[in-house]
Length: 257
Image (cartoon, rainbow, N blue to C red):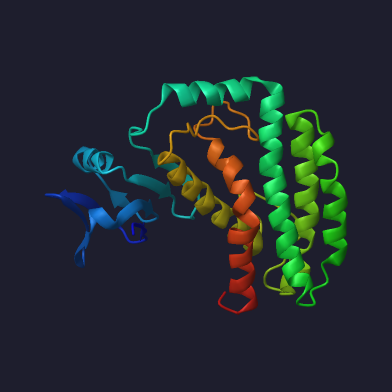
């Protein structure tokens, strides 16, 4: 089974015959190309055209993060599953307001259901989150009534706000206090963890889309505009609570962080 590779050291990523290796001042470490799904680069890494050509041939994506762990961008190799028909159908659903809003609601519903599952899990472990669960349940009743993407994003934002208020109840940790959701940059430790986890999830979703005939540039909940990718943001909304947030809660509650 193919696995992602994470590079945190500084060095040079090179091609060697039919494989690649990472070279640092301490030596070389070979990366088995046949077992690699994508590569995440966090260190100062030098690459060249020969390597990129080889990664393209082997359908391997590169994700780049800067010194502070912020997502910088992705080397997205030439699509190997191109389908003009699928792209036309995707665009058709985006341009048809009824189809687009129905699809966008599915992403929101998926995220809300997983938020409720997370809160129910911690409620059963005697965390005081029931009031947030009730508020989110009430707010979610309005999703189907929303007639525009803007209205849908607003109700989704209200649901997320109530969900984020529950974090301090779940964690009860003076070193990781939520306060308010802040980004670019996040203003405290907990927000930094959320942003970092979300960035990783966005890239995972992007990598999975690469192995389909879908175009990641055409999203439905997140508007298709001059940003390079948006469909991965839609898909990630479903999984943030059960992947990113649950990992954060476990790391803090178990004193790993």
